[in-house]
Image (cartoon, rainbow, N blue to C red; front, side, top):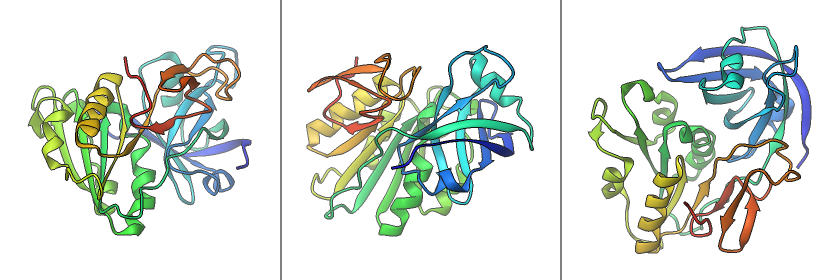
Length: 258
């Protein structure tokens, strides 16, 4: 799979909710190479060295254009939120190991995301909708400000269920209160998850209990994004592995969530 470093024009940079942003940039060469679960590394400041390192972003959608989904909470992402239509960004990608497709016997595919962990799920639903699965999204957010309409998921035929910590949208509680939406037949159900480690640990415990296979997209701070610096290493059943190179997608039962 070819890695591309290029400069692309920003087409859209908008707030989807009080908390989350969506950026679209014109990168047809990159769009043709991306698979669900992969990410891009973006230089957020092309005028200086602060911040020095690029920032990783899961690809939210890759059709004619490439889209990312982000939360402007640090210096790099805040700089990114200031980009306007027509601005140029420096992008390296696609990077990382993508999601694997479900087994042939799968009928229900469950996407479980917490907060910014929704980022790799839309491009995944773009691919899975072609297979006629029963697609279900279980999304957990802190409050109303961490939830957005998710129209694109619904357009893909995904059944969306939401839980918020304060009950301002959907059911009150963590995303685990939505686990009753999951078909517990291990031969016909497959789970994908991305979000905070405690949430993915809860998903893992549920999946192991019911022998349901799945994959997790892990999130760590990345410096090189090429597997060289080892700064994003996590513990797995097979020793330490890098999220940027060996992942972000791992088998759900492989990662030791802490």
